[in-house]
Amino acid sequence: MDTMALRNLSCGLFIAGARDGGRLTGCTVNSVMQVTSDPVMISVCVNHKNFTNQCIRDSGGFSVSILSEDAAGEVIGVFGFHSGRDTDKFASIPCDKTAMGFPVLRLGVCGWLECSLESFTELPTHTMFIGRLTDAKTSPGSPMTYAYYHRVIKGKTPVNAPTYEKPLEGLWTCPLCGYQYDGSAGPFEGLPESWTCPICGQPKNAFRTS
Ligand SMILES: Cc1cc2nc3c(=O)[nH]c(=O)nc-3n(C[C@H](O)[C@H](O)[C@H](O)COP(=O)(O)O)c2cc1C
Image 1 (tube, rainbow, N blue to C red):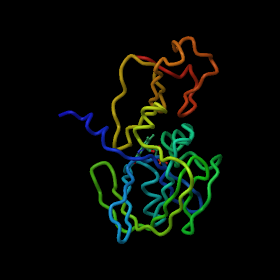
Image 2: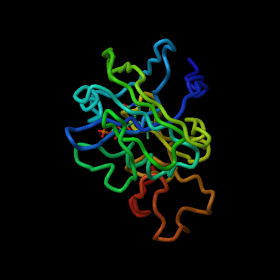
Image 3: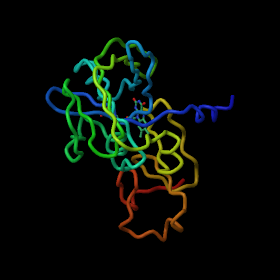
Image 4: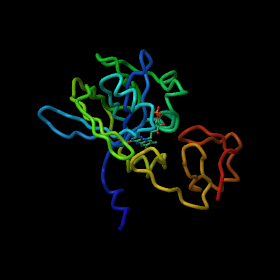
């Protein structure tokens, strides 16, 4: 089986937002899609282990911030490699609240959706949430595709993402987010000690090679 075919499934990159009581939280997802048009229904798959999973159930819906190509790698990193259980992810990220009180990012996005929870299906590792669109807004910018995230930002996905792939051996790898330095700015050893992971901000000396 040639699983590289899965890379040819096109999808975008998003921040799924929810509420933890009065606190705003959410996580990076690539598994958002529109599943029907009348009424408009949106699905998102969230791992059972992710804090956002419980928050979507408790808050009765979710928001989707549609990331644009100018979204900062650090934003994808904060939302994709840290958990809202122990991190206040929105502490330093400017956001607005939808009418239902879900967070939507102000910067690095080309639109957002607000959905009320309609139903969900339990899959072996993830819950597929189906939401009914209750509000939406567009803003200028080109949507970031998952392919762009891999090709241009050189980002990776953690084990909890539905599209996780094992890292390549022999490359200097970030222990937190899995980013692998590709040598484009010279040998890894020659990078300044102040260099940090472009996705999650880990220091150079945290990187490991196999
Ligand atoms: C590029 C990318 C795509 C991801 N896609 C998904 C996804 O579709 N579903 C999911 O459950 N987790 C996905 N993740 C992983 C979650 O964002 C990650 O596990 C996060 O730390 C969960 O945070 P939480 O515990 O606050 O919910 C993705 C991460 C990245 C970096």
